[in-house]
Image (cartoon, rainbow over all chains, first blue to last red; front, top):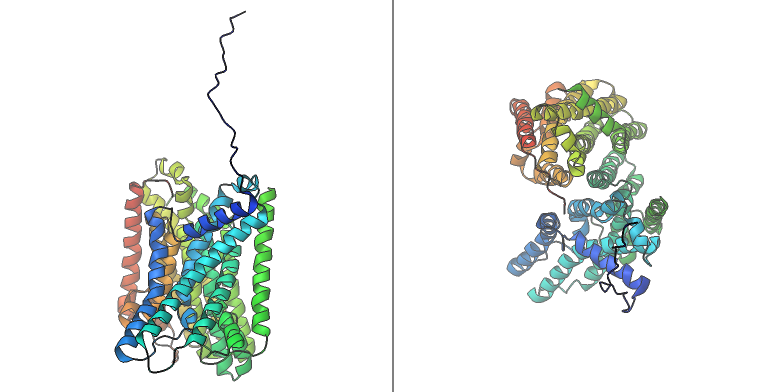
Length: 288
Length: 238
């Protein structure tokens, strides 16, 4: 028998006995962390280049427009047309950043680590969704607000477009919610970031291409009413159609949209479908 | 060209979710062509618009992105490219093999559906179907080489490729005529214009510029990609 030499040292491990913040705080922390990550804050410098470049491009028309207002006393780009005019930039931002929010956690299978905390699947999905929606809303709201501030300061001869500004802000929120839910749902189906970017941008290019081609073909063959419906395939025109229905603003495509509650119902249906897919995807990922 | 590497790459491309995008996009193109035919009947103008803005302008760059970056970028992201690079195969040969795989996938999933879609709308009238199929084939080869190079150069290959295709070819090319000279999809249109005799269609870039440009861009991108693979460093991602 050898002599017993092993000793257990007391090296002073302590339990955590501070306050435990619980589910709400955990979800909030996740949302804030995700929102910072979308803009590359807290990540490497290389991760900041693309989001900040896109933010700068989004601000450019607002700055130019303020300069135009100051110099020739004329309104530049309208508030309600801003999202439609900048749709390619918004789509690229969504495509490049949505996979960052969902892909790494799925790829490295760390979802169970989140779920071992008070956070539930719905909290996790909700936090990611809120982060993406907030990021897209900021991307639209900041240039719009800058434009509005510029208009107030420049003092144009015509009255201030407060109504258009409010309408465009509400539409920005709707657009952000629609894009975020569709983008996250598409990106969550693959753990690969590159493929996620390709599928989200593919969705945008495909819908805008289809709506453009059908619109032109139907208009040429004289089916004007049907042509207006095909515009709604493009998510940005769908949001613009809802904006027109809600606030009676000028349609940004110059043609008008189908009237009535249908655009709004389609929009809600698309969001609901995307959210169902997203939640189903995460329920599956959590149970595997 | 190394058949084992090619075989592995084909399996990686066709065995996963990537295949969904590669199949769905061309199917959608053919579906749109069929629907347009049902609505408007055979119309040469519509066919040209569909080919120009949708087949060559949207589907081809997207498939080029998926195939071109897909053959190499995921392996670099995973770090599994190390297993390939540590074998006694010359790095330029690896790059060339991956390029051949991407280009052949583009021929199958982009050029053939382009021909089918055009054929569905107006058969072979004015040579539009042949022209755009040939344009898509050659431009697909150039896209495969360029996006393969991007995949070797950066982790954000798909995003940068999207910005090139959407902002440079789409937005800038739309307003600045000079930018069209340096846009792969315009070169595809030049080739299509050369073959077809349609009056609805006039390419902006002369064929004498487009063909040498495709050759130079493809060869240069492949050479640079091969060189970059020789000194590839796998640094950790964020």
